[in-house]
Length: 232
Image 1 (spheres, rainbow, N blue to C red):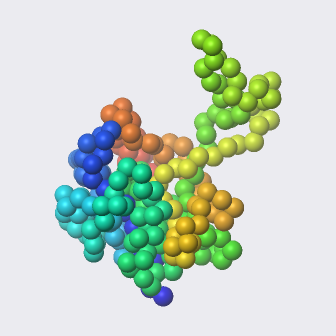
Image 2: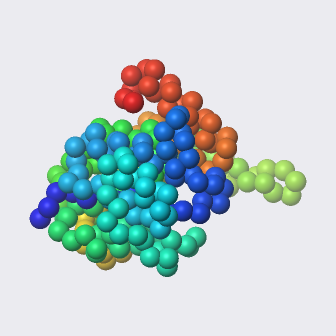
């Protein structure tokens, strides 16, 4: 078997932030940060970008990633899940036991976290995946919903429970997903008991779906550089 394969899904046609994958983020095309983190991790034999967009492919190649094929149109619509895209790449590029999906919009991704995910999966043959998570900032059991012009507890049974007495809950950090090739090809669910969590600090995680998200993430990346927690 060959060494691990990195697959970075990056389709064109972003609706909320046009050109999101190649838009300059702190002076560098967004997708470049994920490619550079993958390169710095020394985990991968190949770093491949799966895209349907020639502009994205051009930026990816300039950063040293491969674009050995252009993604088919049926895998580049608004409804195709990431797992299907990764499975397509794993099928086209056989011989890699471990295949890692990296999101193209993860500018605070650290090479160390990538290595941790790989090592955790390698050390546990009974698991199919290892992916990034972070803790919610407040117990989800105490969430509120809008109701009849006011608010109501989403989980009334926990309304009187002290927050420190509730178990911590975690969310998908949306950065990377290590998986075994056969698990990707079989469509095994990532969010299951077959997966290992790689817990990231909350300040390293940021959804980027709006202009406000984008600005905040740029500022956070600059803070991480200044503190030395993230290398440029």
